[in-house]
Length: 398
Image 1 (cartoon, rainbow, N blue to C red):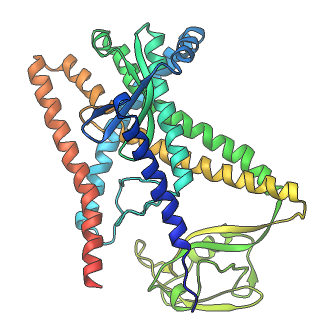
Image 2 (image 1 turned 135 degrees about the vertical axis):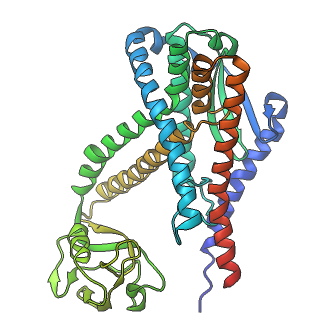
């Protein structure tokens, strides 16, 4: 039996990347401003002229978008907090429920987390998302004539990002609406970035890629262990073309057919070379519906050209499509996380300004703000810890 050593390269280049980041920070440590011992800021003036120019030329549009972001900010803050509470409830009382929030470290599979971010996709997408987020803060601030002191690169441990630093004292003296606009600009820009990336993916990258391929059947991202498909010998790499002897038109066709099954029903999936008789189990979430235990049903394609140039173009489109998908996912995730009513993040700053306006007495308002921040932090930590505890428990049982 051949020994598979591919994992060595997979993790070695990831470790080398993070070690290189650590060495760069250490070598230039006198140029960095360290905060909380694991956050390293490298301040520059790069991009400040661009922010000034954009804010000056499109001042009214920037302000309108900033005002629109306020509504999204307040609604998002409430929605994300309720989502966290609901996720914690499910983790505590609903068996096998998936966590609603997870740490993200590109290239690292975090125990108990349902999401794994591929290394290069994650690093590049994360930098793009954070860059847009921080630039939006600066552009809206400049549209109101506020000073932006610096921009730069930030390292959160091994993770690289960007930051923009408005003049804090000046910002706190501005009218409430202007403060709301600046704080909400980052998360709102993440929502806009996700929409733009989705539009480019759906209306440009996917159509161009589909011109170069032809369908070959239906595949799966995962075949769950212990479920009927796994018991029948079906694997994630299998391409299916038939259902009960009839040709499938695509992934949606298979999903529709499986949704009509009941527990105990036998269905046959296959292709020209093999067939798999599968007796359905009961769906874990929908009583009375059949379930075979496959996740991520999708159409499978092959390149329909022998041209080296066109094949290279197809692979480039595939890579760009993958990057855009992670930009969408991380943009939505980071935008939502920044709207948490928690201390220094954007949602917390919005809440603090609102409490100063609505609660009589600044000290009382700040006390309520700190209490909400502590509660939010506790709920967040529990959401992150329980999946790990559950994973450790299952590992110990094994």
